[in-house]
Every structure is written in C-alpha cells, then in structure tokens.
Amino acid sequence: MYSITLSPVGDTLPCSPVETVLAAILGSGASVMFGCRGGGCGTCKMRAISGRVEHGRCSAAVLLEEEKASGWFLSCQARALSDLTIELTATNKYRVLTWGRRPGLPDS
Amino acid sequence: MPYRISRLGLVEIRSLDLDRDLDYYINVLGLQLTAREGKTAYMKGWDERHAYSFALTESDRAGMVRMAFRTVDPEDLDYYEKRLKEFGVKYDVVPEDYRRGRALRFTAPSGHTVELYNEMDYTGNLLPSVNPAPWPEGLRGIAPPRLDHTLVTAPEPQKAIEFFQTVLEFRLSEMLVAPDGTVIAAWLWQRPAPHDIAIVPGKPGGFHHAAFVVDSADALFRAADVLAMHKARIDYGPGRHGITRGTTIYFFDPSGNRLEAFGGYTAYQMDPDCRAIRWTQDQIGPAVFYYSQELNETFLSVYT
Picture 1 (tube, each protein chain N blue to C red):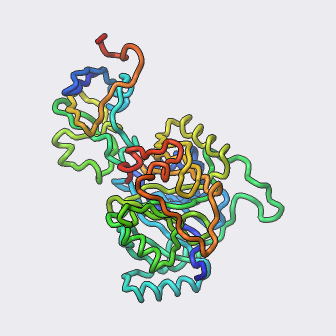
Picture 2: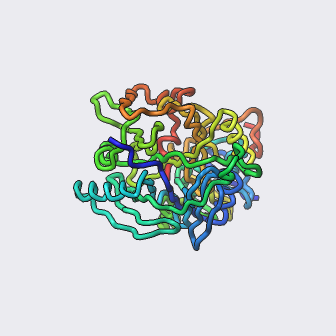
C-alpha cells in the first residue's frame, strides 16, 4: 500500500497499487473533477511533484509525452508505483463528500 | 424541397483498446457485431437492415473518425456531387468501402470528415421479414434498435451550421440563440425527426456523442440499470431535454467517448415546413437538461 499526499490540502490517503489514483481519492470520501473515466477526455489530469505512476492507456491527444515526463498523469488511468505527492489545482476541484470518518484518514 | 438523406448511416469512432471496448459495445451497449476487419469492428442495432451503422477503430486517441449520411435514392448522390462542385467544396470520391458502394467524402467547416453514400449491403435485421415478432429474443445489454443522431463540436458553429443547411440542405429544427441574435448551436434534420446532427461550440472535429434509440421510459431506466450494473460512467440522466423533448441518458464508453440512449420518439415529428424553435441563451439550462434546469460542467467540457 502506498500513500498519496494531496498538496496543498495536506490530506494523506492510502492507495493500493491495483487501484487508480482517482479510485483511491473517491474511496477516501472525497471527489475531484473527472469526466469520461476512460483516459479519453483529459478532465482528470493531475501532476505528481514526487513519486512515480504507471500511466495506463491514455489518449495521446490529451496527455502528451512531455507532460508525462514532467509528472502529469490522468488520474482515472494511473496507478501508483511509489508514494505520491500530488499538487492539486483549482481545476481539480477537490472536495470532501462523505458522512462520518473518512476511510483511511486519521480523525480530524 | 425533397428529402434527400434518409438517415445518419454511419458513425466511426476511435478506441484505445478494441478488444476491451468491443466487449462493452456488445455486452453493455448491446450492439450486434457484424464484422471485424483488422483494427476496425463494424456493428449495428438489432433493427437496422443494412450491413452496419457504427464502426470502432483502434487508435492512440479517442474521438470521431467520420460520419456518413445515406441518401434516399442513388440519384441523390449525383445531386449532392453537383452541389459540392457548385459551392466549391473539395471532395474525394471513395469508390467503395467495406460492404458499401460509392461515397463522396469531404471535410465540413467544423473539421469533421463527412461522407454521403447510398449503397450498402442489405443484410436484414434480427427478425424474419415475414410475420415478425416485435423484437428478437436473446438481446444483451441496452440493446438499442438503431443509431439515431450525432452531436459534434465546431470552433465557429455558425459556419458549420450554414454549411449543413446550405450545401447539404438540412433543415433547422431548433437553435440556441445569443441575445445579439447569433446562433450558438443548432439541431438539424432531414428525416422527419428532431435531428440527425447537432452542432455546438467546441474544438474542431470534436465528438460530443452518438445517440442510439431507446423506445420507452421503461427502456431508458433499464439502460441506466445496465450501465450502473456494469459500473459504466453515466454522465447525466435518466432525464429529458427541452430541445427535441427527447428523454435521455448520457454515458461513456471505456475509451471515454460519450454515447446517449435517446428516447427520440417521445419527441416530435417534423413536417417539411416546420419552422425552427428558438431557445434563448438565458434558458440554456432547461433547453439541454429540462429537469435539473442547468448544464453540468462535464457536458460542456468533456468530449473527445
């Protein structure tokens, strides 16, 4: 199990190597902006400022090779290969959407 | 002005993984696979009588390859060839394609590859042609009877709309109009239904969705059940459009192309002299999503 730190929010979530980064975020009781969930539209694009991901199958039209090299990935396809620090932007629209204690997160 | 186009005959889109996506198209959407030739698979709804209406081609990206309209008569193809010449539209004659005869291929001002054809092999639907039952048994997934329409994006929608109206003689059923009178988006038809194609603002050559017919509210809710059971991503619905009055559910294929199950025939039928319905921009919410009365962000920004 790896951990994902979301900057600048500061939340740290568990992420299994078999689930996508998007699935890990949704599973933690939060949500981000995403679209097709098929690697085709690019709406769920994020950037890791540390750590490595397996990109999965993404449309070459929405995730360029040079973007991959500078940390960008599609969260609906990418799987963590290490602990990750993700720099969220306003476009990602991170928000908490759950009742009760968030799974995998310490009590706040 | 006679009708010269009988239907949207073909939509071809790209797949990031043909094996994976074919499983979805056959078992979740429930199209009939008619052939697989190399990197392209040909499919259709169970009630379509020609060889195919939908093609999926493996690529490194999602999005539309082409759309093709079938003319009513063979002579209509000659008629359109004359019109393309008259309006100075560059076109190629495609002598034949898979199970299809001669086609005219050109690029619309929206950036889309458009074809006109008449001949395609008549292979029949899934019912006998003598004393048929109303539907065949053994269908899988949503199992729409047929392809209905497509909606595409254009950086300058007015130009693309004018092209379809003027050169190809589509009629306008509905339009969304800015306060200064500019047409923002339009729904265009040739067969007497609300639309065969619609054009909205967006990137050149953009594919917003292809829609398949579902014929009742019951079928629409069943489609939603099927999608959720298979954990497909539903974008919106079940719901209703103000424009076209059609009932709707939007969802994505595994490569991220948007599809729609459209209850088209809760919608109206057109008479040749029907005048276009106008929607004002301040009512864009109910125009598109009648129940929620507002657009959602993904509907505007997410397409391939």
